[in-house]
Length: 559
Image 1 (spheres, rainbow, N blue to C red):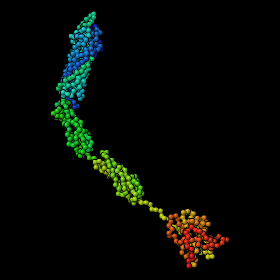
Image 2 (image 1 turned 90 degrees about the vertical axis):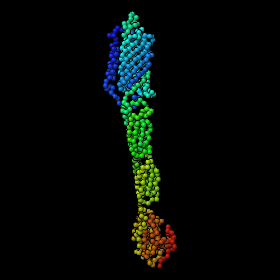
Image 3 (image 1 turned 120 degrees about the horizontal axis):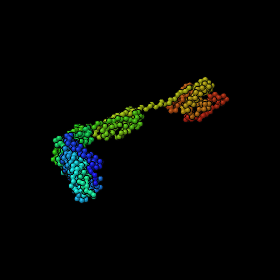
Image 4 (image 1 turned 180 degrees about the vertical axis):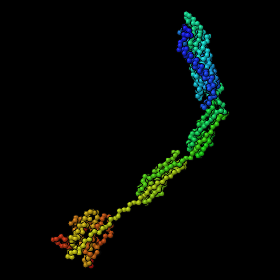
């Protein structure tokens, strides 16, 4: 048997006081002027109700609750009913009653009649809430205490409503969980068995669930609602989607709502709070968008809004043109490159033109052929067009250079002339002075190994062609025998110059020979007398020489 109220557990009394304090504070908040101020409703959803009537089934589970070590029993079946009236969308006052008639026998019961503030916060169709209640409690048992003594108790807990769309948002599914505390004085504890009477303190959990009937509404009427809308982006190009977003204030519908959109250009995608406008095929300009917020099947107009968007003209592409070579020779290939960009990233096509040559390519590069072109400047035009017909052009130049002049043709060069006037007894012999000339000639042939030499023999009046030929042959003998010059590099000729001389000409490789004076002769027909270049003791018998020149008719003396 518990001793008395003064002997109750200190912790349990503190818990009871805290719950009572919470009830008082919530009540003051509910009754304050600020709590009853009109709220602004920015979100679109079911309108907050004015009165909620809730009926639930519940389960009552005591813990750490006994009389003389007899535990209060669990009452598995019972009913919870409540009615809540709201000052605004957040704060209201709730009356609640419970009835758990019996558990294991007729003496077990739970009845409460309590009231207190309730707080809620609606988010769309979900309405979480918290309440704190206080009032009368009647709890029977656990040891044959009759269900007749009333005491006091408090209840605190939280739950949530989910508003159902049918029936115009009038019904909501309801679930909550509560903690209950009660004190019951059942009179003196009967001794010695201690099975009746006694003072009971009950701590219990009470989960419950059911349905709520929502009546009335809180919030401004449709005429007070406002609708604003904006277009994003406010400026775009044809084909870019425009998103129009609406915002509603001071309005919570009780019926289904629609957003009816009209535009001066383009097509809205739906009848929702956010719609997308198709801008394909719109010409550049500014377009109007109007929105109407309507409610119910009759489409009652609640509010309207308007905004605009602009369609811009496509900017043309830009292009630059360049060649991989600025100066070439005729026939050299050239690569042309176009660097182009569309500000709106439109697809681009490429074409090319040139005032000379042939150019091929339909991409960012093209090939210019310059075969057969004469020196001069070639202008290449690079053209770019986007899929909207916007174009850009750029040019570049390529110079075909004048080829360098060919090197001058080597020319024959006259060297020293050999005179045979000093020795009248031997007018054909090469003397020492002539050897000096021939030594210089040998030096020239040694320096230019590709050059040839021509000896042109002449005879004076009263002499014959034999004398002219012999003089040329004697000069050749000196170069070949004394200087080691290859005889195949020496040509022999006779001319009609009326002097006792041998003229010499150096013929570089590639030099023309058609201007060399004189004519070739057949050396095998020429009879020479004496030594060719004054070698003492040698007979003066004529000797014949086979020369590399073509044979000519026998030389006869000129008169």
